[in-house]
Image: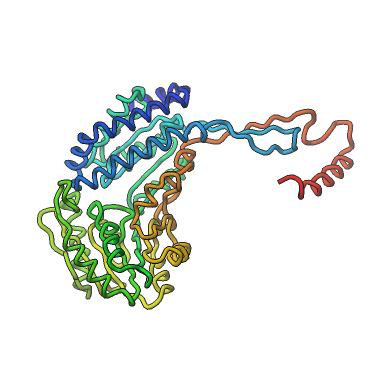
Length: 458
């Protein structure tokens, strides 16, 4: 009964004034902050991440709830558009909810990547059926409970637990599909959404580069790169897995980076930096990619070992271009460094990938901006790894190439969950002209008007 119940609830929810929806999301914002200890506990229990990394999810959800709560009314109110004929045609655009939005969320950010997409969908008047990863259903259930406590009506948000079969049910029955996960799965879901002719948005994989320019402070860049590479134990679509450093600062940067990496503390306390990997299976995948790269000629500067599910942050050099690790997403605390002779070479190497999700550039801001504008990525951070662009929720977030379709955040992050309806009112006479005026005469008059309008009507 999940989808029938959601459709019934949505018909009433869409009639709820936007001001009331806003009040619910602001109440949810407050609850997320007030009850953050409960959220942090369940996130850590299910994912094994550090306390600080778990807090990033709480912060992200609160920011997103606040942003869209205040933005929704402006985005959803009817908007005037230029009519076909000035004065004679009045046109406006309305926004209607899609219906029931399906969200298939991953395990790596079980609060942020589930709820931060549900928030704008709900504010737009949709019901949401959320299928969390099987490893992180507790986080989803707690988030849903907090939304209900904030005033969200029954059945407007529903949690559908299960594996691939549950995901297929979402794809088969939703009116719009939002997915975060691997490019391979995203491609299959996009094809299924296409068969049904429903909207689809996805944030997919990345092999994100970080460029250290000759104008960079090597020590500062090294400290920033540690966070860019190893936050959330590298289990983050926008984290850095490739570093291209100019040869003029390469030795100093590498020494500083390795030292900072070795100083990281593994564990789950507030004082720890890197948590554990999600599962034994994922540990095996990460370990195998590193071991294979080493067998093919890569050298380990630090890391490459594990204790239980804690995999030591790992820095490699001399990774051969034919190694899987060179081009495939590891999704773990592993990065490789390459020296480059010129900035042009760094840009070329950075863009030599099928992915285009995030990038990072370190150096003098003017020079870094010029480099940023040449990178094939949906977000580029200057003198920051990924957080600056991600947390700028008024700007779009998403991938180029095989890193995704559509965008979250910004106005598109809400409007994609709506259908536009254009309503036009024609006054005084039809567009075809007065019935008592010869068509040729009317055509000449319109031609003259169009010529004048080229300069006057913009």
